[in-house]
Image (cartoon, rainbow, N blue to C red; front, side, top):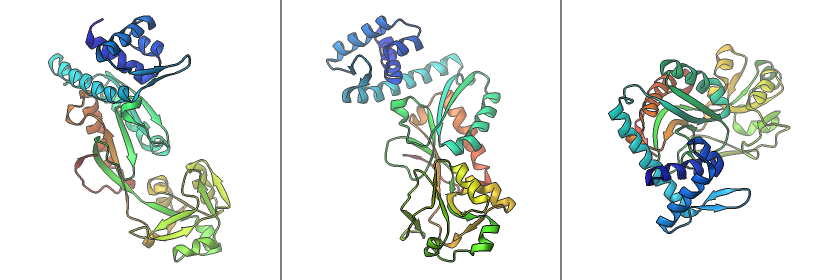
Length: 306
């Protein structure tokens, strides 16, 4: 097996955390993948994986090597695409990750339309409310809501959302509108698991803090919104999640003058200008679509290096 193929095997095993699954993804046998990794480790003079009977994990050296190798293979694929004409007709598998509720509302229908426009691309969408390491977990692009930490990734801003406290008109008529954040302690509050249960921050600099002791905690944003909609109490959610409710009047936003600054929304990917054709096509398509969503209150901003 040549060195380039050994690098492909290494990336496949790192992605799947399994010699068998990694080999299968390349149409190889598990023993041939094991031999390729052993030869690669001998050539490098370093262990790339920690192997046990149940798990295969990258070593610290393996993690660093994986980042470099993925970038090299992506550049090679981009060069091959340019020669073969694939740059004009994007092809391949695209792996996307995004927050669960945002994915259900916006990303899933967007990806379906994208695949209609690009019939030679297939896609996998992971909707999960946790940080996904694009390099380690093998994803091409992420939609992220929030300030971006320094990471070396490329990011394109597509909009912004707000943290909104809301309630049903009937509830507010019965219990009154909170006029300042401190009034929230007088109200029923439903909180989503994983949110800041003890403190809600208000004001442009988030310096106003209200300690929240919810009477009801749920593990679903949709459930919290439904409970607020039925008139039980107040919920705090992101503005895009209740845009239709606000427009229809089934929910009313309160304390709008005390909201923190809007939270940025970005498309993030690891390959910058060296991204393959399939990813460039998706970034162009999705950025244009997302910027047209009124609920994101898009403000023009440049692509940046995260």
